[in-house]
Image (cartoon, rainbow, N blue to C red; front, side, top):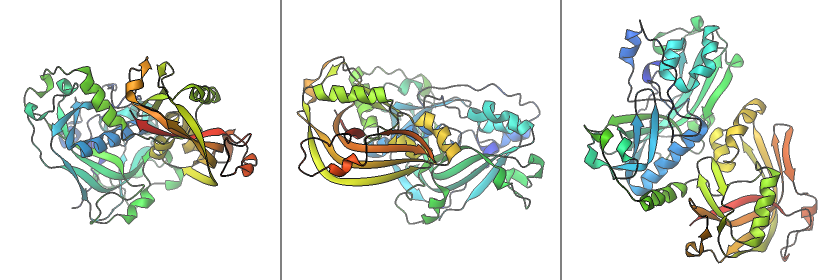
Length: 444
């Protein structure tokens, strides 16, 4: 199978996503398309790209696709042409299978005018439209290495599973293209871009003057892909585009009445594929201190959702944490991709992405000397205000850490020198080496 990237400004009719994620929808300002009949005729509204979606939205899309794989269901969306929302509490009958492309072929597409921008990438249109007016162009470099492909392509309302969101369902996601991409603003004058369909001619684009707008995955990792892969290579599994198929007549007005426990059950399944080993380095120091105090009193209940970790301070979960010393180890982590940030520092990823783009990378240096482990956790023991609980803190790694953006120090806690005093038989961490580093979250 050969997977080709569709020409950006002819492939998308306004896929917009709210900054808070896929659960909400926004409608961008309506563009005046008078005189653009040829472009409109070429648009395929059922094959939108997702390169202008925020990283949080793409992470949620990826997480929900993993739920769909494990539950043997298909993703369902509400799609209105100029807005789209993935419906986490509705699924359709069917299964996905990964279909590898015949290797990875990098492709480049260019958006050269404001009408094409509004039609293709409405999420970024308001922010970058002025660049096109000054003669710049938007350039998408992408490599698609495969796709999750559904085993069927026609759907009726009776194919929906009756979840709480099914009353809004309009389309089923029949394919999710995976790979890596970069969305740049090129300082090269748009008139210099040659070739039909947005291809780049011999003059090319001035790569050195590009400004990064959005990216997903690592294009350099996609070269490892082959047509025999059972899954995308590491670092090359970011969503790039989706294929949608409409549900039969009446699907958008299906009336569903589902109990709250159905929604809660689906939410727990969604949360089960979210990052469950997040770092704490981006948390405000006051929040880390509050968490540490709460852990001295009881086990800690959590509501985990894409891009958010909410500590339920009024939810009581009896039990306690015991310290277990470990062999001292050091670790160095580097983040250059938004998806990596959301997987490791989800609570602060949205604010850290611009910093990472300016500095080139974020890094964390860790010294781990032990863990606090939970004892006595039981869902039946929950009391107090526990609405929305999905997980509890099963363990916390402790030691010392340093968080930096390039050469700029962002935050630090603990003293790595003091950690040299750690021993395998310690009952507590050494002084100045007990900073909370990383959570281990388990579903409730």
